[in-house]
Length: 385
Image (cartoon, rainbow, N blue to C red; front, side, top):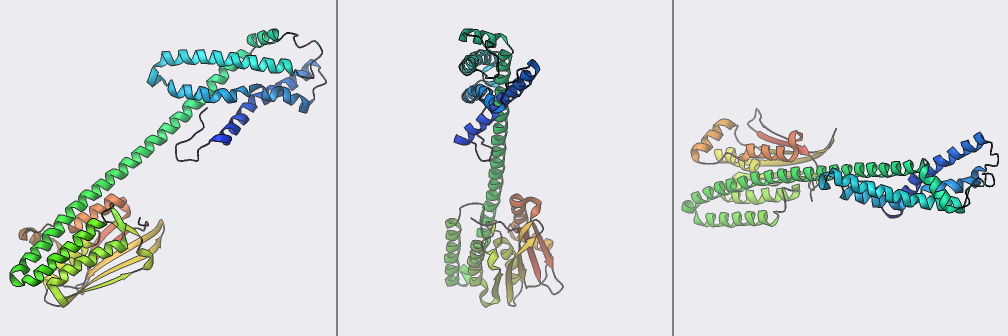
């Protein structure tokens, strides 16, 4: 009976496995012991000593401790889907007869050498051969077949359980890989989107102020280098994502100068929380393009991160606030399309949150009465790698 488990539980190996098998195969010996105790009373054998006679019956089935791993391995190798039903049954029948015969001989020898003390003198046959023949023609032979069948059934059940656990883990790995691939695909859309907008801004500066255009190109290169250096997966710690935001706003600072102010307020507990890569940059970019860029007045971009406890575990709330004038989001998107800009920011961010956390994460956009626009992300607060 195979006792090694591969379903994520602690495997039963070595001494523990043999101890388990020893206890399991002591059960039929104990049952036979109880049967003999009852039989002795029924036949009037009054000299049955419970402790003394236990040694005559408890070890009788212990040879199956050694047989069990053999039968378990045969069961695994001779699965009907692998070798066919007839071949599997034939080999099992031969093995059942062979192991049963070996056990009968061993058990008969033990009984002959160490006979029960309560039996009257002359009750046990004098020859070992007679003991073997009596065992062969008694119900002991059926018991051997039953024992073999129990081991086969238990081994097949454990093998099926192990295979089911393996398939479940494969399915989970595939689901995780598909989710990560989807996140990567969405992220690959964001980077060209960002680069397109940044280069458009740079083109405007080339004719107006070549020196500032050169500074912007250098900062674009720094941001892309940072992005490639930390390109390790679909998620990063929030601290790394905030660095990306600061690099991006360093680029926009070349365009807007003192008109652009960044305010970052993050809980210390939130810095290690894992978030999808490039999660905040599209929201900050939207705040710049639809707020700061639409007015000649100074504006402020505020990024807040709050780590809190929720009913289902810790949560992270991120807010990006734009102090610029209130805008109509649909009108801005239509204008973006007319200008040739790609409106991927908010839809892409929502899709990436859904791919990473399903319905357990959300993105909302709200314009307050004083013209402040607030984008809020709420997601589970898992720790970053």
